[in-house]
Length: 135
Length: 135
DNA sequence: ATTTGTGCAAATGCTTTGCACGATA
DNA sequence: TATCGTGCAAAGCATTTGCACAAAT
Image 1 (cartoon, helix red, strand yellow):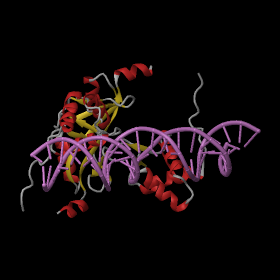
Image 2 (cartoon, rainbow over the protein chains, first blue to last red):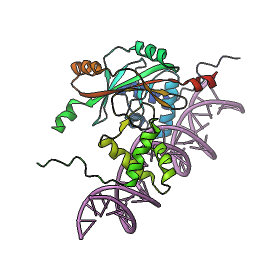
Image 3 (tube, chains in turn yellow, orange, green, purple):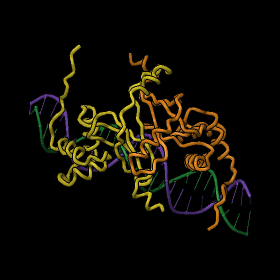
Image 4 (cartoon, helix red, strand yellow):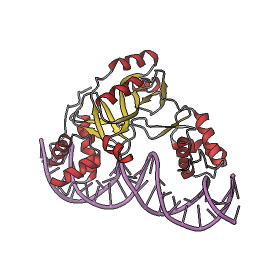
Protein backbone atom coordinates (compact mmCIF):
# COMPACT_ATOMS: atom_id res chain seq x y z
CA UNK A 1 0.00 0.00 0.00
CA UNK A 2 1.51 3.23 -1.13
CA UNK A 3 1.71 6.29 1.01
CA UNK A 4 -0.52 9.07 -0.15
CA UNK A 5 1.37 12.22 -0.98
CA UNK A 6 1.14 14.80 1.77
CA UNK A 7 -0.13 17.39 -0.63
CA UNK A 8 -0.98 17.12 -4.27
CA UNK A 9 -2.80 20.39 -4.33
CA UNK A 10 -1.91 23.27 -6.55
CA UNK A 11 -0.78 26.63 -5.49
CA UNK A 12 -3.41 28.85 -7.03
CA UNK A 13 -3.80 32.55 -6.44
CA UNK A 14 -7.27 31.94 -5.02
CA UNK A 15 -5.99 29.44 -2.50
CA UNK A 16 -3.25 31.81 -1.37
CA UNK A 17 -5.75 34.62 -1.02
CA UNK A 18 -8.13 32.48 1.03
CA UNK A 19 -5.32 31.42 3.35
CA UNK A 20 -4.04 34.92 3.90
CA UNK A 21 -7.55 36.23 4.46
CA UNK A 22 -8.08 33.75 7.31
CA UNK A 23 -4.69 34.61 8.79
CA UNK A 24 -5.30 38.31 8.43
CA UNK A 25 -8.87 38.44 9.69
CA UNK A 26 -8.04 36.42 12.81
CA UNK A 27 -11.65 36.76 13.98
CA UNK A 28 -12.71 33.16 13.32
CA UNK A 29 -14.33 34.28 10.07
CA UNK A 30 -17.24 32.48 8.46
CA UNK A 31 -16.86 31.37 4.85
CA UNK A 32 -18.79 34.41 3.74
CA UNK A 33 -16.58 36.80 5.69
CA UNK A 34 -13.57 35.23 4.01
CA UNK A 35 -15.29 35.63 0.67
CA UNK A 36 -15.97 39.32 1.31
CA UNK A 37 -12.34 39.86 2.27
CA UNK A 38 -10.83 37.99 -0.67
CA UNK A 39 -13.15 39.76 -3.07
CA UNK A 40 -11.41 43.04 -2.30
CA UNK A 41 -8.29 41.78 -4.04
CA UNK A 42 -9.90 39.38 -6.46
CA UNK A 43 -13.39 40.52 -7.45
CA UNK A 44 -13.99 37.57 -9.77
CA UNK A 45 -13.58 34.84 -7.15
CA UNK A 46 -16.66 32.74 -6.51
CA UNK A 47 -18.10 31.59 -3.22
CA UNK A 48 -17.70 27.97 -4.30
CA UNK A 49 -13.96 28.45 -4.64
CA UNK A 50 -13.76 29.98 -1.19
CA UNK A 51 -15.72 27.11 0.35
CA UNK A 52 -13.61 24.53 -1.46
CA UNK A 53 -10.34 26.11 -0.45
CA UNK A 54 -11.34 26.60 3.16
CA UNK A 55 -12.20 22.94 3.42
CA UNK A 56 -9.03 21.89 1.65
CA UNK A 57 -6.79 24.13 3.75
CA UNK A 58 -8.41 22.76 6.90
CA UNK A 59 -7.79 19.19 5.73
CA UNK A 60 -4.17 20.05 5.06
CA UNK A 61 -3.87 21.51 8.55
CA UNK A 62 -3.13 25.07 7.46
CA UNK A 63 -6.22 26.40 9.22
CA UNK A 64 -8.82 24.80 11.48
CA UNK A 65 -12.53 24.39 11.05
CA UNK A 66 -14.36 25.34 14.24
CA UNK A 67 -17.74 24.01 15.15
CA UNK A 68 -18.92 26.79 17.42
CA UNK A 69 -22.30 25.83 18.79
CA UNK A 70 -25.04 28.08 17.50
CA UNK A 71 -22.94 29.59 14.71
CA UNK A 72 -22.28 28.77 11.08
CA UNK A 73 -18.93 27.13 10.43
CA UNK A 74 -15.92 29.26 11.18
CA UNK A 75 -12.27 28.99 10.29
CA UNK A 76 -9.45 29.63 12.70
CA UNK A 77 -5.90 30.63 11.83
CA UNK A 78 -4.89 29.06 15.15
CA UNK A 79 -5.05 25.27 14.91
CA UNK A 80 -4.50 24.24 18.53
CA UNK A 81 -7.26 23.05 20.85
CA UNK A 82 -8.80 25.94 22.70
CA UNK A 83 -12.15 27.31 23.77
CA UNK A 84 -14.42 30.03 22.50
CA UNK A 85 -16.85 32.63 23.65
CA UNK A 86 -19.83 33.58 21.51
CA UNK A 87 -22.05 36.62 21.90
CA UNK A 88 -25.59 35.37 21.49
CA UNK A 89 -26.68 38.76 20.25
CA UNK A 90 -24.20 39.72 17.53
CA UNK A 91 -22.60 36.32 16.97
CA UNK A 92 -19.04 37.55 17.50
CA UNK A 93 -16.60 34.82 18.54
CA UNK A 94 -13.57 35.30 20.77
CA UNK A 95 -10.87 33.03 22.13
CA UNK A 96 -11.00 32.09 25.79
CA UNK A 97 -7.75 31.92 27.68
CA UNK A 98 -8.21 28.65 29.46
CA UNK A 99 -6.05 25.58 29.01
CA UNK A 100 -7.55 22.67 27.11
CA UNK A 101 -8.79 20.09 29.62
CA UNK A 102 -7.57 16.84 28.10
CA UNK A 103 -8.55 15.10 31.33
CA UNK A 104 -12.20 15.54 30.40
CA UNK A 105 -11.69 13.42 27.32
CA UNK A 106 -10.05 10.77 29.51
CA UNK A 107 -12.94 10.79 31.92
CA UNK A 108 -15.52 10.35 29.18
CA UNK A 109 -13.43 7.60 27.59
CA UNK A 110 -13.54 5.66 30.84
CA UNK A 111 -17.29 5.86 31.10
CA UNK A 112 -18.32 5.43 27.49
CA UNK A 113 -17.47 3.05 24.74
CA UNK A 114 -17.00 5.93 22.33
CA UNK A 115 -13.62 6.67 20.83
CA UNK A 116 -13.38 10.25 22.05
CA UNK A 117 -11.31 12.49 19.84
CA UNK A 118 -11.67 15.85 21.55
CA UNK A 119 -14.32 18.24 22.78
CA UNK A 120 -15.74 21.59 21.76
CA UNK A 121 -16.43 24.05 24.54
CA UNK A 122 -18.23 27.30 23.81
CA UNK A 123 -19.23 29.88 26.37
CA UNK A 124 -22.36 31.78 25.53
CA UNK A 125 -23.22 35.26 26.71
CA UNK A 126 -23.38 38.91 25.80
CA UNK A 127 -20.43 40.98 24.69
CA UNK A 128 -19.96 44.37 26.41
CA UNK A 129 -21.40 46.27 23.44
CA UNK A 130 -24.56 44.17 23.18
CA UNK A 131 -24.99 44.15 26.96
CA UNK A 132 -24.93 47.95 26.90
CA UNK A 133 -27.48 48.13 24.09
CA UNK A 134 -29.84 45.80 25.90
CA UNK A 135 -30.03 48.18 28.82
CA UNK B 1 -45.46 48.73 32.22
CA UNK B 2 -47.66 45.68 32.37
CA UNK B 3 -46.41 42.22 33.04
CA UNK B 4 -46.63 39.92 30.07
CA UNK B 5 -48.72 36.84 30.68
CA UNK B 6 -46.64 33.75 31.32
CA UNK B 7 -48.36 31.88 28.58
CA UNK B 8 -50.92 33.04 26.10
CA UNK B 9 -50.44 30.10 23.82
CA UNK B 10 -53.19 27.77 22.77
CA UNK B 11 -53.36 24.13 23.44
CA UNK B 12 -53.55 22.69 19.96
CA UNK B 13 -53.37 19.04 19.03
CA UNK B 14 -50.25 19.76 16.98
CA UNK B 15 -48.48 21.34 19.93
CA UNK B 16 -49.34 18.43 22.18
CA UNK B 17 -48.09 15.98 19.56
CA UNK B 18 -44.82 17.84 19.12
CA UNK B 19 -44.23 17.91 22.86
CA UNK B 20 -44.96 14.24 23.34
CA UNK B 21 -42.78 13.32 20.38
CA UNK B 22 -39.78 15.06 21.95
CA UNK B 23 -40.49 13.42 25.31
CA UNK B 24 -40.98 10.05 23.71
CA UNK B 25 -38.03 10.08 21.32
CA UNK B 26 -35.60 11.13 24.07
CA UNK B 27 -32.74 11.01 21.55
CA UNK B 28 -32.22 14.77 21.22
CA UNK B 29 -34.20 14.72 17.98
CA UNK B 30 -33.76 17.24 15.20
CA UNK B 31 -36.81 19.15 13.99
CA UNK B 32 -37.10 16.78 11.08
CA UNK B 33 -36.99 13.70 13.31
CA UNK B 34 -39.80 15.19 15.39
CA UNK B 35 -41.70 15.89 12.18
CA UNK B 36 -41.32 12.27 11.04
CA UNK B 37 -42.55 11.03 14.41
CA UNK B 38 -45.55 13.35 14.68
CA UNK B 39 -46.54 12.55 11.11
CA UNK B 40 -47.28 8.97 12.13
CA UNK B 41 -50.23 10.19 14.19
CA UNK B 42 -51.05 13.31 12.26
CA UNK B 43 -50.16 12.94 8.57
CA UNK B 44 -51.39 16.42 7.66
CA UNK B 45 -49.05 18.34 9.96
CA UNK B 46 -46.57 20.60 8.22
CA UNK B 47 -42.89 21.09 8.92
CA UNK B 48 -43.49 24.78 9.61
CA UNK B 49 -45.86 23.90 12.44
CA UNK B 50 -43.30 21.54 13.94
CA UNK B 51 -40.58 24.19 13.78
CA UNK B 52 -42.85 26.83 15.26
CA UNK B 53 -43.99 24.62 18.11
CA UNK B 54 -40.52 23.40 18.94
CA UNK B 55 -39.32 26.97 19.23
CA UNK B 56 -42.35 27.97 21.26
CA UNK B 57 -42.12 25.01 23.64
CA UNK B 58 -38.44 25.77 24.17
CA UNK B 59 -39.25 29.39 25.00
CA UNK B 60 -41.87 28.24 27.46
CA UNK B 61 -39.34 25.92 29.08
CA UNK B 62 -41.13 22.68 28.30
CA UNK B 63 -38.19 21.40 26.26
CA UNK B 64 -34.69 22.72 25.60
CA UNK B 65 -33.00 23.74 22.39
CA UNK B 66 -29.49 22.28 22.21
CA UNK B 67 -26.72 23.76 20.17
CA UNK B 68 -24.62 20.70 19.63
CA UNK B 69 -21.52 21.71 17.74
CA UNK B 70 -21.44 20.25 14.25
CA UNK B 71 -25.09 19.22 14.25
CA UNK B 72 -28.37 20.83 13.20
CA UNK B 73 -30.47 22.11 16.07
CA UNK B 74 -31.75 19.47 18.44
CA UNK B 75 -34.41 19.45 21.10
CA UNK B 76 -34.01 17.86 24.50
CA UNK B 77 -36.77 16.65 26.77
CA UNK B 78 -34.34 17.21 29.65
CA UNK B 79 -33.92 20.91 30.32
CA UNK B 80 -31.08 20.94 32.83
CA UNK B 81 -27.51 21.90 31.97
CA UNK B 82 -25.52 18.88 30.91
CA UNK B 83 -23.05 17.75 28.30
CA UNK B 84 -23.25 15.75 25.13
CA UNK B 85 -21.34 13.29 23.05
CA UNK B 86 -21.66 13.30 19.27
CA UNK B 87 -20.55 10.58 16.89
CA UNK B 88 -18.81 12.35 14.03
CA UNK B 89 -19.73 9.53 11.68
CA UNK B 90 -23.44 8.93 12.17
CA UNK B 91 -24.31 12.13 14.04
CA UNK B 92 -25.94 10.35 16.98
CA UNK B 93 -26.02 12.40 20.18
CA UNK B 94 -25.86 11.01 23.71
CA UNK B 95 -25.86 12.48 27.18
CA UNK B 96 -22.62 12.52 29.12
CA UNK B 97 -22.77 11.79 32.82
CA UNK B 98 -20.59 14.55 34.10
CA UNK B 99 -21.72 17.33 36.41
CA UNK B 100 -22.10 20.79 34.90
CA UNK B 101 -19.00 22.84 35.75
CA UNK B 102 -20.49 26.17 36.78
CA UNK B 103 -17.04 27.19 37.99
CA UNK B 104 -15.91 27.48 34.37
CA UNK B 105 -18.48 30.19 33.78
CA UNK B 106 -17.18 32.00 36.87
CA UNK B 107 -13.63 31.79 35.65
CA UNK B 108 -14.48 33.20 32.25
CA UNK B 109 -16.56 35.94 33.87
CA UNK B 110 -13.53 37.06 35.85
CA UNK B 111 -11.32 37.30 32.81
CA UNK B 112 -13.73 38.74 30.28
CA UNK B 113 -16.17 41.57 30.19
CA UNK B 114 -18.80 39.31 28.68
CA UNK B 115 -21.96 38.51 30.59
CA UNK B 116 -21.54 34.74 30.53
CA UNK B 117 -24.78 32.83 30.61
CA UNK B 118 -23.62 29.24 30.34
CA UNK B 119 -21.50 27.00 28.17
CA UNK B 120 -22.02 24.21 25.68
CA UNK B 121 -19.67 21.27 25.88
CA UNK B 122 -19.75 18.57 23.24
CA UNK B 123 -17.42 15.60 23.09
CA UNK B 124 -16.70 14.39 19.60
CA UNK B 125 -15.73 10.88 18.65
CA UNK B 126 -16.89 7.61 17.17
CA UNK B 127 -19.70 5.49 18.58
CA UNK B 128 -18.96 1.76 19.02
CA UNK B 129 -20.92 0.85 15.88
CA UNK B 130 -19.15 3.35 13.64
CA UNK B 131 -15.77 2.51 15.15
CA UNK B 132 -16.36 -1.15 14.26
CA UNK B 133 -17.34 -0.31 10.69
CA UNK B 134 -14.25 1.82 10.20
CA UNK B 135 -12.00 -1.13 10.94
C1' DA C 1 -66.12 37.26 17.51
C1' DT C 2 -61.52 37.72 18.14
C1' DT C 3 -57.19 36.13 18.15
C1' DT C 4 -53.89 32.72 17.51
C1' DG C 5 -52.30 28.65 15.01
C1' DT C 6 -52.02 25.83 10.84
C1' DG C 7 -50.82 24.42 6.16
C1' DC C 8 -48.94 25.61 2.07
C1' DA C 9 -45.59 27.42 -0.79
C1' DA C 10 -42.14 30.51 -1.41
C1' DA C 11 -38.06 32.55 0.49
C1' DT C 12 -33.79 32.64 3.07
C1' DG C 13 -29.11 31.33 4.68
C1' DC C 14 -25.46 28.29 4.34
C1' DT C 15 -23.08 24.88 1.78
C1' DT C 16 -22.26 21.51 -1.94
C1' DT C 17 -22.12 19.86 -6.68
C1' DG C 18 -22.06 19.19 -11.96
C1' DC C 19 -20.07 20.90 -15.70
C1' DA C 20 -17.39 23.35 -19.21
C1' DC C 21 -13.55 26.25 -19.40
C1' DG C 22 -9.05 27.90 -17.69
C1' DA C 23 -4.70 27.48 -15.05
C1' DT C 24 -1.03 24.71 -13.06
C1' DA C 25 2.47 21.44 -12.95
C1' DT D 1 -0.63 17.79 -22.27
C1' DA D 2 -2.70 15.83 -18.50
C1' DT D 3 -4.72 16.98 -14.41
C1' DC D 4 -6.62 19.85 -11.16
C1' DG D 5 -9.00 24.17 -9.92
C1' DT D 6 -12.24 27.84 -11.00
C1' DG D 7 -16.58 30.14 -11.99
C1' DC D 8 -21.17 29.74 -12.75
C1' DA D 9 -25.58 28.22 -11.91
C1' DA D 10 -28.35 24.93 -9.97
C1' DA D 11 -29.34 21.97 -6.23
C1' DG D 12 -29.49 20.62 -1.35
C1' DC D 13 -30.42 20.99 3.52
C1' DA D 14 -32.21 23.44 7.52
C1' DT D 15 -35.09 26.93 8.85
C1' DT D 16 -38.19 30.98 8.43
C1' DT D 17 -41.99 33.73 6.67
C1' DG D 18 -46.32 35.65 4.28
C1' DC D 19 -50.76 34.66 3.65
C1' DA D 20 -55.46 32.80 3.59
C1' DC D 21 -58.08 29.61 6.05
C1' DA D 22 -59.18 26.94 10.37
C1' DA D 23 -59.33 26.25 15.28
C1' DA D 24 -59.24 27.73 20.03
C1' DT D 25 -60.59 30.81 23.48
